[in-house]
Image (cartoon, rainbow, N blue to C red):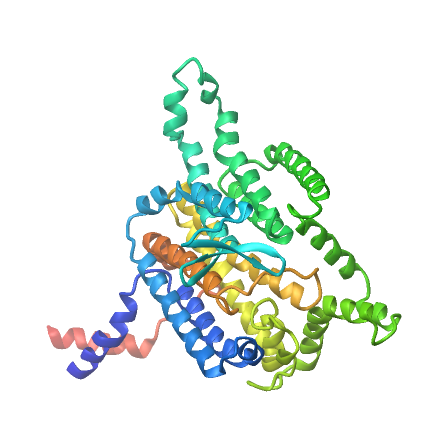
Length: 459
């Protein structure tokens, strides 16, 4: 008995006493393991491009996974919600500074703007390449969680102080607080992101809109914001025309991709003369989505098996933008279903955590981050199966990429940290859940007789 008790204390008690939502822990750990396995098989072309070896890339991915796990644990161990709230106030300011560095094309000894796929999207800081949009997504969700909770509780300190003066008396009105702290930051971020990626602007804008709606902002109040956004997009088109694509040139790229998506690329190629310059230019534009479709069709139910993909030698970013199609090719429809179940489970557990958070900030932050992660995952999947125009959105926690992996690791750390704070409410809710079928337990006459005999012996 002592041995059994000791084993339980050393193994099961460790798991039982581990705080935070255990289902979300399992999801993130499985995603990390999937990333190591998938990146290990999908990067032979990357090894050729970087004049490296697959062993070095696998080692690099193991290091990325380890750093990401450390980031999750560090953030998860923050035990006070006010720490997240205080840092969330800086989310818009930091996002604005980083996006402006991209917009002006900063070029300093310690920091340099980097062009990726024809657009300035990253900052080279020392030996690390920071993909700004990946972190802006997280920071703006956290900032807006702070903003809507502060509006709910009327805790905009600067606005309340300045509102006492005659000059800034207008700040006492709720609409101005919303404009300054919520709507204006959303529009500014969208405009700056649009300069580098139209698809990222639409996705980030949608996530920010959903986040503030979850926080309590009414949908009808966003109609004027949408009108202003449309005017800003029209202005960006005008600037792109005047600057000949130097600024907001990605609008043309987005229009081209939407046009190609609405057409049949195979039919257009067949109508062109093979071997011509125009033929190869058109082929380069549609090579990735066509190869992704081939990977999906060849995967079948069971897949080709690990390491047997052929399209990984054709698609340059198979390990990033087309990871889901690669998973289908090697692991089949069953592998794809497993991935989908993981992200659906994240949505389900996230909703449970949200229901049991006791303040607006925590609810909005968790809901926004969960929708961001799962929303990007499902958008990635739809594009990979040719149900949407090509974009550069990765599969969260699986696709290769240091910045994206680190950003989503921080997001998972925040979700787990807040889930630990809500754990007692979740446990109480689970205990109160009634079974779907009430057991029909009838009294056992033999057991009753034994109990009567035992009671006589005691006398």
